[in-house]
Length: 204
Image 1 (cartoon, rainbow, N blue to C red):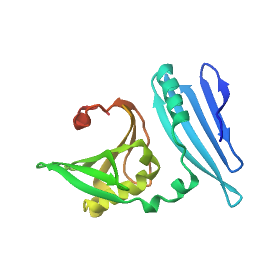
Image 2 (cartoon, helix red, strand yellow):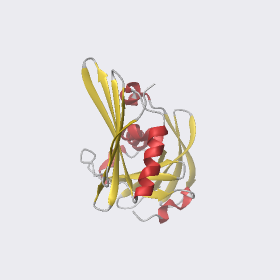
Image 3 (tube, one colour):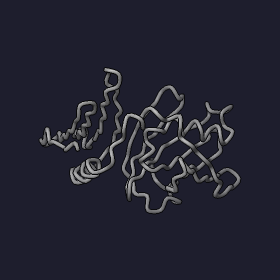
Image 4 (cartoon, rainbow, N blue to C red):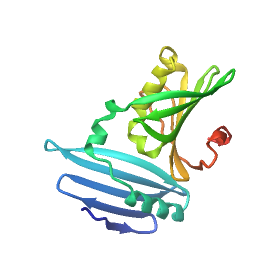
């Protein structure tokens, strides 16, 4: 079993690493512009070459960063098969409600019963707020494509703006993507999700 080793612990950098023959995992927190940016990087060896996968987070304080590092060290690590098997994600949508310009759908992913939702607001730009458990963060592009296809929005995809909200326990990271789909702008913020139905009240 791999064990975490502390590599650095300074006023602006904290880093941990654990590794095996064919896998290395590194968690690194860096203090920049009054915020802590935290990265969990997986490196897998496949057919003699290294494959990387990175999850990124933002924390507002050192205390939040320490708590996030503790959670990241304790969570179950993804495997190479998780990174390579995104085409196998099964997604079902069930409508929760429909109003004149707003819809809410519950997402069922791979038969898990997590609280995953998509809020749809129809206007000149179609706005999707996609709320997912953190376990699905490596599948976001595929999930987005399946949502657009399932809701019949593929022909007007150039009018879609979409935000991903990820939650773990009582907090989440926000990842914001703007069109076009081949140009990704990522911004991540911490927010509380005790009342997911009030997510429209969260300032971006």
